[in-house]
Image: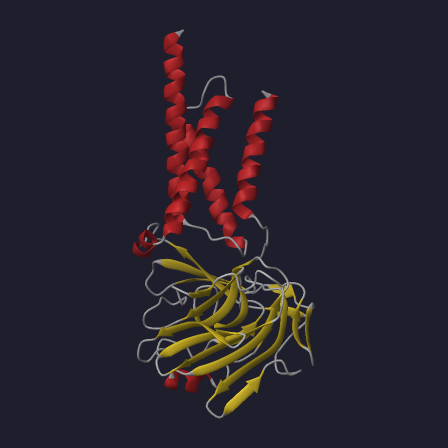
Length: 343
């Protein structure tokens, strides 16, 4: 009996570990119901160490996850939106040939899902996300230069938007040239801020050096690698807004492959749990009891995730976890009955 209790407790702890990892605990500063009554909005204001970022006459250096940013939206942003034109010059060197997120080298954005423009590294590839009338709010689908960061040497990246064309150059050679719709920046927000080395929500760090970073718009040229041009506090405090969707299966979730993968993982994980609960007792629990146990564990995980910055609670997860546990219990029960009938 003691061994079975140990197994049960170990399994619960294992599910909590998977549910709460990477354990960045924080209490939301506020909870709000959205105007449409379909979601609960909750806001974190975490503070993180940012002391490893250096800005000197040699440029920006990110030796550990950090961020350099403007406290207010760039002054030139409204003009860029009005004219749908912009020139960006970056001289960069990556510290690692495999970085993901995409890891943000340069971004004008609000958070991980809403942006005007991002230049980043995904694996060894250069990724450019530009919000236009033809993309979603995240600038997807992106543009890509394959294997640009597979070796560590310094590269000069130029991005030019004008005359309804986007051009990306690498070391003076054109790598991307694509047409853009009229009013390419018409969907941009004038309220988004500019940051280097990370997303404004601090979840997409890039490690490497930015020797030069300039913005040119008509007669204006701004060099952001000049000491004092960017805000680099020793601790970075930011606001992270999340939502708990009361509708478990909103229409947009059926258009994303990651939604189906997430649903399948939740169902299979709790299917295995329901099956295990049946087999850890000599006299199995009823299907109803197993279903209630799985629902209680799932509910504890979803409620707990409200207090972990990297986690996203979901009513869909609660439903699928409970269904998976119930189905696992039913399969285990039927097998148990079948085995007894053969004796």
